[in-house]
Image: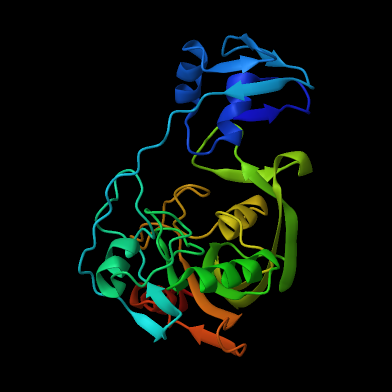
Length: 302
């Protein structure tokens, strides 16, 4: 792999760890020490400062995919035909296999349910998966049964033509009843698990529209409409305006008096043009029970 570095001074290990998301900074440092990374044909140290205009050459070992097996897991299927499914993913379920979650993910359940009828574009670890939502975010998720459908839905996602509406409870309440948060999201400079608002050269455009639906004592219920769908977008955007999602342990304090684990966020509605029929389709998943219970408690406190 060859990368052309064309920005300001930066340590090579830090730069590569942000560019290569599948590798940790410590692993990048090991590669550098082993001589697998060269700058303009010369080996360097992890502390080497790139100044701009260098050519970085890497010899990356092939990532070994773990064997992903089907597992019978109850699925809440909102819609299904020969080309796709719309699934209501529960809070706490990981979408696709990752370290620590290899046999209890949505993908494991889909493999058992659909057998060989899943698109392969996402690779062996992500069959059928064209987009994702976080582990502790519940709600609607599109699953593609074949590559043609996958490519068509991917194109709609790229052009921001997929309708996605979320509901969430945030700490406090924004001053404006409606608003739009715009910026660039990218890897957090210090924490690999997080995303953050960054400069244009370090991230991708992210746009979130929000509307306050109900105010409570210390909290508020918001509806979010995504114009783009970046990783952790709603969570980062709300934290950036000092109204993190309730119970968000990554972008907020995670502490709450309601005993909820993980952000209170639900992907309520998804709308798209069906690749096979050309017709617009829209599906909504009801708020999960814990979310409804929370709203009842908040109403009682207000």
